[in-house]
Length: 182
Length: 250
Image (cartoon, rainbow over all chains, first blue to last red):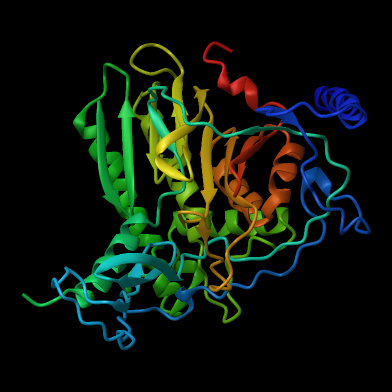
């Protein structure tokens, strides 16, 4: 009920927002989240659970137990002769497939002029391995804000970080191949 | 008393604010996580889940925790109309998407059984809180900035809730779609969900993230859950009850 009232008041505010010229540089404002209404046909799900869901495509690397990371051969590096003998040879280097527990990580490092200019993900843990179509009804208008770094001291930090170790491992492998001798 | 170890490919931290905390209790919690890894890792040849998938074990031989996790997976499958399915097309099981939240929750229960009343368990950014911190206040939890992981962009104050964040890995402004590697993911970068416990928060954060920009609406409809979703432009959308958690003394 509280959410309903909140929604109503925000709708009213939004009407005003639309009718009058918008002020500049708002930091926090209520706007309509673009919750698509594509699937209105479907019946209302119980307790907010989506009614229509595309069957997941569970193509996890786990289907075939893999014994060990399988390094893939690196593509032929571009031939650029470095004058000052930089740390890395130019080219593209593929890292090993590193186990991130929830899946595998594999990166490709791109070296230009002896420097890392790009790191691309070839493989990424895919525990969110699905596409899903949910029944979106008229949603309450939710508050939005621009994120802003805080200085607060906190006890704990929540974030999606699982992949970082495997990322470093795969990148380290790619850079090993890129390293110039001597 | 705090301890951090790296297990299951992630950082696990346990902090106990009770004066009766001991190294033995912390050791017991980490031993539990090691057991979970040894049992449920589909990447380990000798794990129970791998042996099940190799048909080396019959259902009658499954351990109690395995039976529990498989039952929870079945329940979650029903609750999400089949979206959350741990059974692959070839018939093998992969419950890893559920095990993490379950393991953190079980670790918290273990601490309670040992008489602990004030603690948190944080595994890879998913957290179960209980009671108060060393200063006698609610546990403060920062939500990591997905664009600069050294920063936090929001602080919430919890004392018995669980919180979990689902997100994409990103580098600069590029976020790659794990399914179509050449395509950058659009829209949502991360979603943080606060729920009655970390198990619930984790599985619904996973589900909501998979829904893309509609995820926050899914959380809004779930009673007892609040969420904070960040899109690729650095705009956050929050559920209507989320801000109550940002007040340290609410």
